[in-house]
Image (cartoon, rainbow, N blue to C red; front, side, top):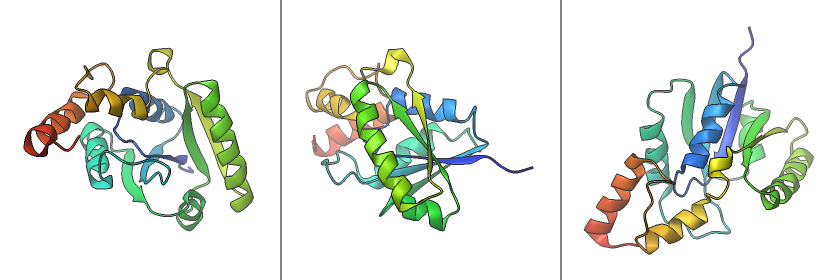
Length: 165
């Protein structure tokens, strides 16, 4: 039997409950999910790629059907070289769709076999974005409704040791 596999790319800076929701729901459709941590060239990251991979590996350690890796370069190049055809993307609000639609059409032009599955986030996560979470972190706001405890613990240690935020 053929394994249904997909890639879930993103910056995950930091990992939020919205990201987790999309990954867990994607596993109801696909047998395996490769979460790719990418550098968003249009944003200044708060966490290194290794830290973000650590967040994901720690959170999904009990999910053998999830793999985690980093992405350097174009998503479609990675997909073609590694024999993936399907990408999962989460949508929160209408503006997400506009951006994701443009990206999907460009990716399809670059890699003809490219397909994208859009998953609507659970309504309780519709207001969460990594950008908003980073602002809450910078200004010492309450974060436990938006990010897992394992991520909170790393943030607290990082703030205590080097005051980087």
